[in-house]
Amino acid sequence: MSMQDCPDLPVEFRTRKGELIALFLLAGVMTVGGYFLFIHPDLFVSNDGTLDDSHLVTRFIGLANMAICGLFMGWEVRALIKRMPRLTFTSEGIIFRTGALVRWTDIRNISVHKSEGSRYVAIQLRNEEAYYAALHPLPALWALLNAHLMGAPINISTVLLGVDANAMATWITHYVAEAHLTARTPPTQAQ
Image 1 (cartoon, rainbow, N blue to C red):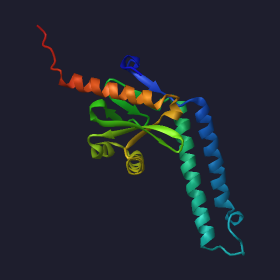
Image 2 (tube, one colour; image 1 turned 120 degrees about the horizontal axis):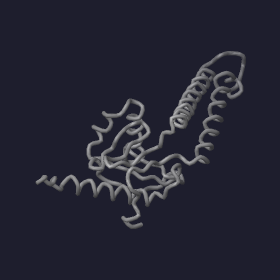
Image 3 (cartoon, rainbow, N blue to C red; image 1 turned 45 degrees about the vertical axis):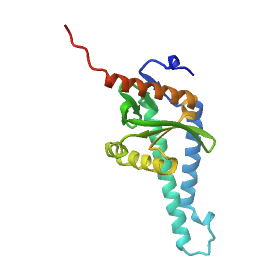
Image 4 (tube, rainbow, N blue to C red; image 1 turned 30 degrees about the vertical axis):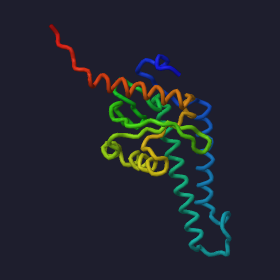
């Protein structure tokens, strides 16, 4: 893909409807499964009439499963109602659904990798600590987990967006290079 194929800014990327429906169904099934783990732990562990540690652990897993999947569903419903894009490319940088802004000049490296059958655009930053500090606690924890497991604090799944990972990486590379050129060019003085 050539650089002239880069879309004009700003560009909004939204989750495809089919992918979103599949995510909702999966979260719904997981929430119902968590409910049954919590309410009826005896269906999943042997029941000799006593409440033992295995029942408590099963209930805890069910409760955690309901909470996580319920939060995910709530977050996605909120995003749908507010018509929030998953991410937006602007002249300043990338704005994520969480509100976090990653400036083009803060990006150190871009790569494409494959994990679990999905392709991701991995973005490494010049100052990851400043990025974590600017985030709310839950997104910061997610970014730390990404950095630890995937090698970069930002990993954009292009499957949900319906965009080719190589194309998105090329666009980001173009915008980063453009931002660095603009930053080095001294402003012209009005005469």
